[in-house]
Image (cartoon, rainbow, N blue to C red; front, top):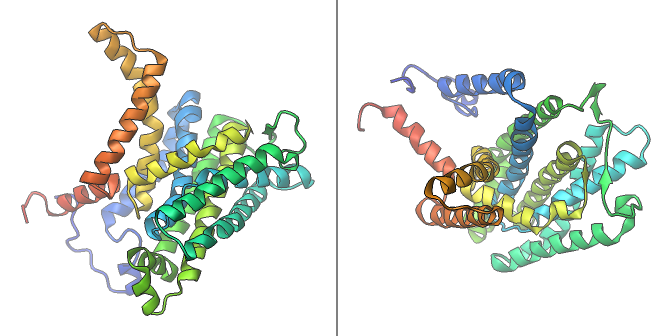
Amino acid sequence: MFYRENGQFKSTYRADQQIFPILQDRIGIALLLLFAFVAVPMFASNYMFKAILVPFLILSLAAIGVNILVGYCGQISLGSGGFMAVGAYMAYNAFVRVEGMPMMVAILMGGACAALVGVVFGIPSLRVRGLYLAVATLAAQFVCDWAFLRIKWFTNDSTSGSVNVSNLSLLGWSIDTPVEKYLFCLGVVCVFALLAKNLVRSAIGREWMAIRDMDVAAAVIGIRPMYAKLTAFAVSSFIVGVAGAMWGFVNLGAWEPAAFSVDRSFQLLFMVIIGGLGSIMGCFFGAAFIVVLPIFLNQFLPVLGSLVGVEISTAGIAHTEIMVFGALIVWFLIVEPHGLARLWSLGKQKLRVWPFPH
């Protein structure tokens, strides 16, 4: 009764094509943003910011980049962790080597460098697909791991191989405390999510989806596969590179190449699968699931073990987490390939006709 379109008429094409055409959606998003920007900084603890909220926001941004390539363009990528590393290290070099370099400009430069690397490793997508393309992008991960581990220029000749940044600021606003880091990440993620949502609804976004559905038919109707695939790699790698720079600058502060290993690439791919392929909203669902589940298991499994009289070790909790991830991925692939976003969409459709059955 409360989620209806009755009386909401559209008199222009612009009104009909807006991102949230239903008034209740616009009100809900406004209340959610108000809660995120005002209520959360007032009541959340430092642990909540450091362990949950900041990682959730940055990984959501990285998942958006991966989803553009995998979900919207249908190109398999296992090198997302490497592209995050490119963004982080190139932003670091721009930040420390150029005197007075603004932090946000350095982060965007890291994303631009990641876009260039993504285009280079996206060239094989013009000839191969499926498993072969996955192996080609996996090679990007190993090449980046080797480069940042062996070439000392990227780490500013650091003997330990680790780098660190400090004194972060944006237009005179110091970003030091957990609350300030959270607000900065939230603002960046909101901007990029809005840009990504409008991009996939544009002409280039429709070209990506045509390539995903059937590239031969897309070429027949005049879509250039080379342009569509390489732009998808470029945009995806740019967003992932920005997320990698933010992961290093804001979340870690000090990092080494192991922070962007192949495990990170699989983690981002799992987020997209669980959250929903071809859905910007699904990226947030998947990131929330991946970030919150380990914390929940670490708290719940010891309590469960004490109730049944069995002591569960830390290694047992870690193995259980991996098994739960694997089981859920298989379940989503079989039962609901479009992930949590599809379940959310079905729930909204039910509410639009409730309490009537038709």
